[in-house]
Image 1 (spheres, rainbow, N blue to C red):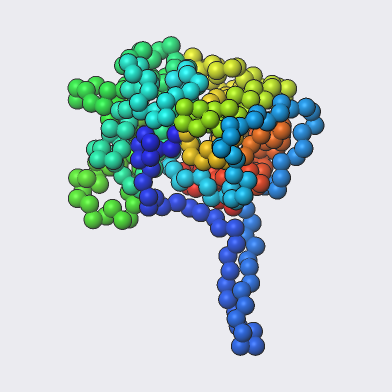
Image 2 (image 1 turned 90 degrees about the horizontal axis):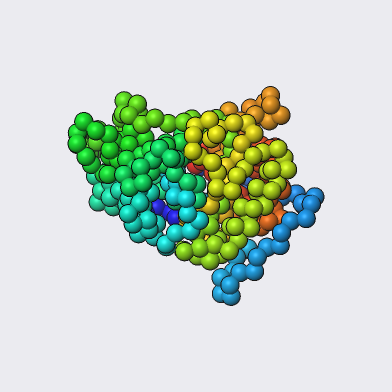
Length: 359
């Protein structure tokens, strides 16, 4: 789910973009002509997804009236965001608005609490700080209390929090959800457009690094993540195709030597991060159901190619659209194992510092 449904994803955020072509004008014999400049992509790319070398499951048939959009170019269709918080719910689908789901659970209260604090009219609402909050099928840690805390991943900082308190405010001496927001989800520096705000308000909207110590976290350095939009409660296109993609990714990565359990074992820090581990999960709406299947691949900051060379996409998140089961072997081979972005399916991406990646 995109934050307009959970935490408003407001307009006007600054981001680094890389246009595909830039032009300058020159005068030749008193006539003006435009000469395109070939700007190299910011990361290794390949144009198309290779044909699969083995049999893949067929693409599921979609309901009548819910077609896939094959006409619009995908590059640039990813909404700009600075961070993605992935709530561990242990469920495989959710109501259309995730903040209305999970009544009486810690994960449901976490989504509601974040909307209250960072959504429109919230204490930390900031139109220049777009945080994407998503539910996921990963289960909460056994250390998370059922109704007072929840587990979550944070990207692109690649952190796992076994227990995040869900109460927006509590006693001043006890860390709460507000403390977590100030320590991790606020920007390190405000936009120049906010310089006219009172100093007290600028301080309130700026991250407080000293609060980080209140929340034990596991740094994920080696294990890649494959997140597949499977929000059938919002749109059946993703709901139908996601389970097939999930199983195909698990099968292909398993054949490549990765361990990838059905729900992702996130109980216990040691099992979360290792070079032979891949996390595959379903997530809620990220925007663009008409581009199903929608897949996000997060490459951890210390992942290596062949055990020696740093992965070219280390620390980045790559968004793909129009992924079918037949594309999964190519995405695994090219992006996860080869460090190349497949241009034909690329919707956008995010860098280690929250910068937006375009082609």
